[in-house]
Amino acid sequence: MTGLPARASCVLVLNSGSSSVKYQVLDMDGPSRAAAGLVERIGERGARLVHRTADGGERVRETSVPGHEEALRLIAEELDTDGVGPASPRLAAVGHRVVHGGPVFSEPRLIDDEVLAEIERLVPVAPLHNPGNLAGIRTARSLNPDLPQVAVFDTAFHTTMPEHAARYAIDMRTADEHRIRRYGFHGTSHAFVSRRTAGLLGRDPSEVNVIVLHLGNGASASAVAGGRCVDTSMGLTPLEGLVMGTRSGDIDPAVVFHLSRVAGMSVGEIDTLLNQRSGLLGMCGDNDMREIRRRVEEGDWAARLAFDVYVYRIKKYIGAYLAVLGRVDAVAFTAGVGENNPAVREAAVAGLEGLGITVDPELNAAPGDSARLISPQDAATAVAVVPTDEELEIATQAFALVNG
Image (tube, rainbow, N blue to C red; front, side, top):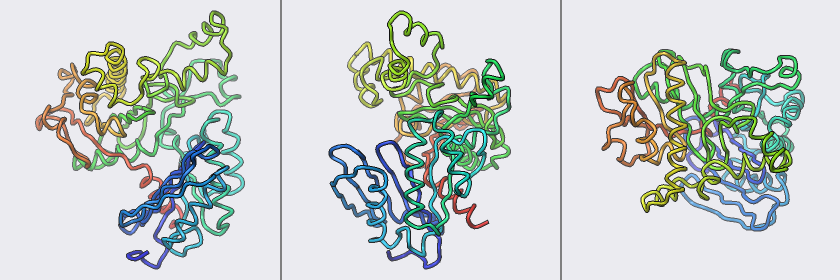
């Protein structure tokens, strides 16, 4: 590919999920994107690869993709065409998104057999995510055994939480034996956005306290004090915390026992209910905030209730983290909903004017795809919209690790 330097300045970022693999190649001399794409519906009918080149071109392949190995080989073929495949001397490393790093991994790690074994040991606490991550790692290693593979963990940024924030109040021996504690997720996003917010304020991250609201189909909040996470809304799994597209978020644990006793539901059925048939979808039948807002404008009662519950939970976490941090310099909205839905942002901070948190209606409603402030100029606490870039964060961490 033209424009790429001959030296190894590129990182291939792989996000290998249960039925899809997202990928990007980032040239860290820019940084700029040399290629990107997605293989979706792995193991299903209608599988396809969509590959995007640096100049905006697109190649689509519709083919059978039985498993992750076949998906990675298809990706490698497309990247080879662009000159940045696994065997290319331009590639410095492969950075893998790994959802759960448990208590062991607090920073990115070069992947060896020991690291791979520990990720596998964590499968019981991340059964929907770590198996796909492992499949991607194993296949990528087989494509070029000499290329450094780096694991970047969603949980790593949250390992700075103090014990009183990370612990559940259950029997300590049971908790330790089964690794039950609050881990948090979306860590690469929270790390990137908290630093970017500090930059937006013209200050060093070590000087700034930020509440980050990552609002997508999955949603989480974090309290970041001087660049270090001190609390986050997700826990042992991504189910805890904010209301999400299909997940319930915070719920009385006794609901599980009640459904078992009264409704006769199995553990698996309750798991499916809370993770896949709850949240916005469970309340109103939609998990797309754009559709929910359309229905709200038409007077749909269920959509209005779902929206109100969603933003009320966000507001509660803002208040809680204001208490945790003591001083908040900025509240940052990010991810699909946080970046693109002014109504959610406005409703989430409505009534917080007395705490110094408010948005300017015109700035909040104005479209934009760059980091920006949406609070009044004289606001005590800045409110920001900061587009997240988890792939760039993974690439940055991987590149830094392999270059010492």
